[in-house]
Image (tube, rainbow over all chains, first blue to last red; front, side, top):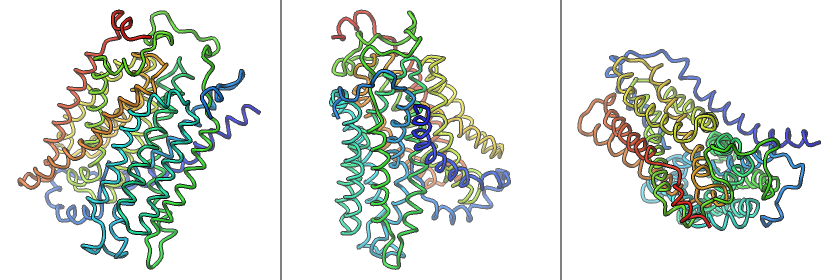
Length: 60
Length: 444
């Protein structure tokens, strides 16, 4: 009975946490599927960056 | 609801306490995900676009988060002694009423389009709930896990980090669900979140117990030369905050937070500017960092049980300073992989800094009023969380305006972070255990 209570208590907090982590993992997928860019290409892609900034506000 | 009524009966397992602490922390950790509401809040009148003069602006809305963080620090500092006196259950229930009540008040503010109600609701009331809900479970866990206090506080504070991972997508999904042609669904999202969080926090408040005064883990007794103080030698909060050790630790936390926010606050944009990647990839990078922030809170503070707190903070500051200095180099050699690796380690140590600090306090001042002392210490976090991003945004914006190429605009900020970490390192080195003279002067 004690073990069951512990399992249920941990599931109650573990499941939402796992959901949050899985969402973040999915969100980070584009990072792993993108090709590493050469630093020299940065200056040529500045227009793209400026456009993308508008849709990506960041905050701590 | 009193502390006496929550003393655990013999046979109670301490492994039920971490879930109750995590339950409260994952709810109040929602504050870090609140930014998903910022942009929609600027379109309450115009719905599809913000109408100048009628709709709120981003700076106006940004104050909600800032007020909440200010109130977190203030309430933790002011009510810390009350938290210790009243016990965790009563504190968690008051935290529930404040935090969820703040969300309800904010929903009313959205419906009536009254910004001051959001400042008062999520900002002031919610912020008080944050402060109370943050310190009460941590202090209780330290008392239950004297043998592994770093690991125990790491679990709870990991929950706070996890709150952002849950709150942000939950907010987005709820807004999408309640959105209509004339409403963005923000008020409904706030109300639903208030209900869900109330349930989880209630579970935490009802499950939490405090150990009996003489309780110790089975088969464990304090090692003779182990760091930390015997309960009878504990230093009360009113005396602890007058010691130089407290203020050195205040600087340690402040520098660690300021430096971590340097990367976390601008992660996505930095990745885009330095490596020319798309907004989606930049967002993915921010998502990855939040996972490392979460994991670092548990892993680093658990490591501190083995190495000692001072040693682990030396690692945060020295390794952190080296890694910050390396970031401009990763851009120079065009290694996105190295950039991601370096920043992920930095952010894991930023999280670790939060979760190790309560155990550090316990080692210095004992367990009796550690929650109240922790409450006063996290005023440094409040300050750093507000001033840090402002400083960093100002420097990088000024550099860009001065014509510095975007990919190099962050270098000055990164070197500033190195400086902050070195200040933290020196401050950490200055922390010594309380001398016999100090102990005699300060203990009751």
